[in-house]
Picture 1 (cartoon, rainbow, N blue to C red):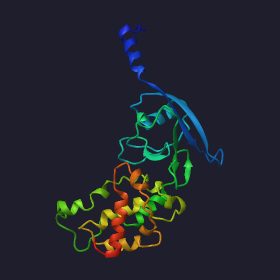
Picture 2 (cartoon, rainbow, N blue to C red):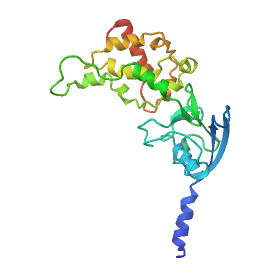
Picture 3 (cartoon, rainbow, N blue to C red):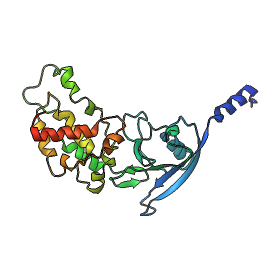
Picture 4 (tube, helix red, strand yellow):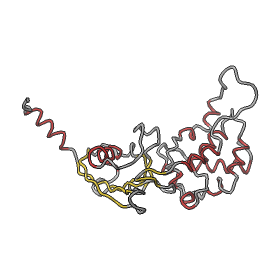
Length: 253
């Protein structure tokens, strides 16, 4: 076996110089073991420019294969890895370790308001049911078009912000009303209704407004701005909800 050269040894030492010791304090829950959740600490050597998702991968792959969480694209697009990190809803794949105070234990737990199935995984069925209930698709009448439906840049701009939703549930699970009443549609569903209500090509705006006029619709919003603060895509969620309320009152959209 070849002996490492001095250059390689020095390079390896230099590569480890910038690593820091990080403690991830994870809220664990396994219904097959206990009805109660517990906190478990993991100490890791990490590059501070790495992401919380990288730390979770390191734990699962090297320390504890039973740790359970969702992730997919790892680029802030799929929305799979939304969780509470240091008490705030974030995407683990977009949260850099250096930005969240690594000198103290970093707490990681499941998002609130949805039933925890195991560790950081929650039951997303109620969330997606609310999404389906607001008819998140284009509704038109008449014959099938022979070409695409044109829309001006100005008309597109009207709802452009709410097209950015990735259904991560960070906004909905940050909402105090949703925590206390799982029947509330929640910010994400309203955002996705907004995207079509204000689309000039759509013909089901009135129908969606009536759905959101229900007792569990937009009027439950208390304008705390938690949803806007939590959105990893920077959507002005509270503004969108207020615009839907205004459309309900004026019937202008």
